[in-house]
Length: 225
Image: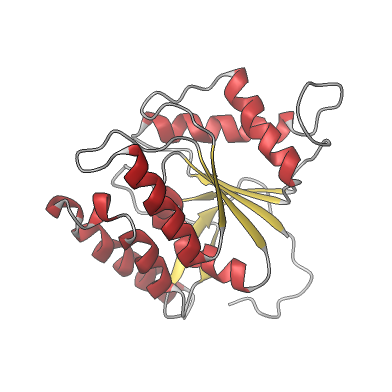
């Protein structure tokens, strides 16, 4: 399957669902990470450093990566932004989209999710000036990388047993964000603890939570735990 994982900034996808990305890649799926912005400025980063870190993180997870080039901290829910994302969906003929959970304190995250939700609709339209052939991804799934102090209430938890170390390595690839700034170093430990907790909810070593509005279909209960 062709899977698109959208992040407002480089590192959001790794923080929210890095273990899932690594496992999906190893299962043979084609995973593209789409960054809406370059994530800069930040106190210890610059565009060149962040781009290098993002590519390193994608390589660790085995995914491809693109950057949409919108301005960091100024993402707006506009028709132009919707069509830019819809163009990527059509060019890639995406089957499943992952986007940040819709409740967040960061305006870039909220705007990104609204853009992606509408872009999914726009991508299927005919007689519209967009690249590629019409495409309607069958699933829109929300991952948690929120700036709110909430405990996720997921629709399902994806088993990431055996992939948490790679998720951690992909996060630490962003040295300018999680290694150099002392105040951000505990985040990696929080991510590890979260993975263990959500794994425990499904009887596995680690897991990552997801939310869906639309029901998921099952053909059997084999493999469900």
